[in-house]
Each structure stands twice: as structure tokens, then as C-alpha cells.
Image: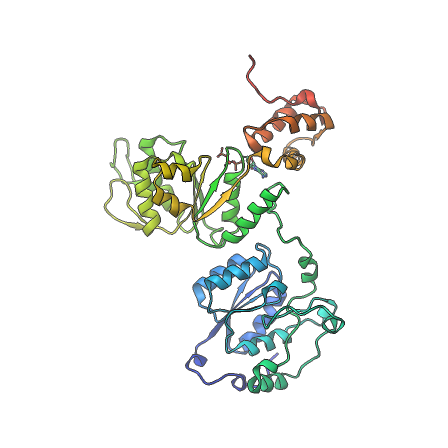
Length: 444
Ligand SMILES: Nc1ncnc2c1ncn2[C@@H]1O[C@H](COP(=O)(O)OP(=O)(O)OP(=O)(O)O)[C@@H](O)[C@H]1O
């Protein structure tokens, strides 16, 4: 619906008036985004829609917005954390949010009243039942009272605009941003674990929280944890939740490739660069362009190669082996190790300058023994997974106790293998008992 009042009423004359103003709408609710987009486009705003926090972040990096409007729930991130991080990184952007913990202490654009007006006009009449009052960044979240539970009064656009122009702070404040869906979403726990990361122990929830926070950025991440504890799973989740998710995720296990070949594998090589190089080949770094490079067992990388990797991390450029030409590549690096890399860096067995560039953000995956209460959840998860290709099996209480008593030196991977072995040993029987639990220890 076209606005009855010219926008010029609202805006002070300024050179920026003529250029399109950009706002990002971050909401998983497509119809809300669409309604608001229509409204703001009519007010000569250029809109970038974002379904997730990661998309909003990427849009902010590329479009220099004046404002971002954030729904009270985002599918990939905790909104309060997102707002805190966002304000730190984009201090000039006016943030409007219905999230109670997100009251504004940041800048207010000269267009704030206009945005608030558009938000108010986008309210769905169905939202009258939503009992959470929204402070759209204009102060602390109001208490929920009978008054705030009432649907907002319909305000004449002319009145809002005129009032906003004369007395910006006194203009009626919109109280609803999101449709009723947000009510149930708000009830979600503050830290929701990622679906692929099984485990409700606090250390596992902390991993999900950290993944959600850092995934949208290009910040390098170092994942530390014992073998089989889910480091690669974490790396994949970081990629999945990043803005790079449609680009390649390339993994390279630095311990699995002979030292002599590792350099060519990483950086690529030209034809004839070494004996046997019958044709040129791009390396894993180039193959990951635009996406994520996962360097597993980074602690095993020879020192000579570490300096070459450091150069790439610092300038984003590389040279294939045997080539003088420089290639620019955009990758996010995630590295993993089972070693205490900080200690190695201190002792000089790992380059400390490279360590600090890789460990900008650290995630630690725990040994299974350190979250053994998650064992039943993990067992069910793996039995369900096995059940996708064969008849589903249950596990009896005795077998579960046997599993709980084990030390799990191979962590979750070992558990997965023990269950696969047990399912084979159980044959046609649909129940796994203690007799089928075989830890595969070598016979004396
Ligand atoms: N929390 C978890 N929830 C579900 N599956 C898990 C979890 N942790 C690990 N796994 C599974 O265990 C197996 C081993 O995990 P992963 O390869 O990620 O471990 P890793 O720490 O990278 O091992 P390595 O150090 O040997 O490379 C995979 O099949 C993975 O999916």
C-alpha cells in the first residue's frame, strides 16, 4: 500500500538523502520480511533480506547499511549474542530489534522514526495475542503488563510522521515486530545444540554456542581435542552455518600425506615441477576458493611448510610449486589438532606466529569420558543411524552399563565402531546385550 504522506516530511535535508539508504531485515519469517520490504521500499529504502544471522552479517559486510532490523529469533544464532557481536563490529549501524535483551546503546540513524513507523505498519493484526512487548531499541525492554499485552492502537501515518518530525522521541513507539511464531521461538533454550552434535553436557552446548557465534565470520578457528571426539564434525558445522556454505569444504589431513607431497597437495604444482608431475594441478587451498579449508592434524605439518602456510594466511596469496605466478585465493581456514599446540608453539616445535593466526578462535572438543552422561544419547543416535540400512536394534540395560564403564580412549568414534560391531554380532536378533559388546582389545 502506498504511503499517503511524502517521506520528505520526515527527513532533514542532507546530502545523503539522495542516495539509497540500505536496511537489512534479518528474520526467518519470509512474510514478515516481505511486508516490511514493501513498506520500506516505498520509503525509498534499499532492502537486503537475510534469513539467518550469518546472511545478515554477510550483507552488513558488503552493503554498508544504515540500519539492521533483527527479529527476536534467528535460526542459526542466539540473538542476544549476535546483537552484541554485531554492534562491536558495525558500531555505526543503527540496530532495531524486538529482542528483549537487545536494547540499544548504539547509534540511532536519523531515519529511526521512519523505520519504526514502517515496522508498526507491518504489524499483523493476528499479533494482538502476542504478549511480549518489544522494545525496538529505544530503551530497556518494558515489563509485560496488561497495557503492553493489548494490540497497539492504529496510528494514522500522518500523525506519526508529523509527530516524528517535530518531536522525535515522543512519536508513538511500535511494540510488535514479529508475528506470533516468535512466542514459541522465544521459549527455546538460550543455547540450543546443533542437531548434528549429539550431547547435552554443558561442554557440548558450549561448543554449539561457539560454533553459532563464529560461523558467520571468516575468523580462523582452531579445534583442539582428542582423536575421535568430533573435531571434523565441528569443522563441517562451522562451514554449514557460514556464508560460505555453498562453496567447497575441503579437508586435508596433514598427518596422512608424506612430507614430500604435502606442499604440492596444499599449494598445487605446475607441469614438470618435480619428477612424476606430468601435468599441472591446483592444490587444496585453491580448490577451497570461496569456501572453507579444513587442515586436520595441523600439528604434524613440517616447520618448512608452516612458513609457507603462514605467508598464505597473512596475504591470501600463494604460488604453486614450480610457478612464479601468484594466485589470490579467498578461504576460511579451520585447523584441528589432538596436540596441545600452544605448548608446542612455546617450545618452538610449532611456529608460534602461525599458531596465533590459526587460533584466533578456539573450540575444544571433550573426550567422551568427560561427558559420559551423553552416552545413552550417543548410543541411540548411532543405533538409529545403523537402522537406516538394516533393521533397527535396541540395546539392553546390561549392555548400556558395560558401555558406561569403558574408558573410551578412542572417544565417540570408538563408540560408533563398538556399536556397529555389536550390531553385526547380534545377527538377526533385534537386541544388543553385553555378549555383543566387544571392545576389540587385542587378546593376550
Ligand atoms: N558429538 C557427536 N555427535 C555425533 N557424532 C559424533 C560426535 N562426536 C563425534 N562424532 C562422530 O564420531 C566420528 C569421529 O568424529 P570426527 O572424525 O569428527 O573426530 P575427530 O576428532 O576429527 O577425529 P580425528 O582426530 O581422528 O581426526 C564421526 O563419525 C563423527 O560423526
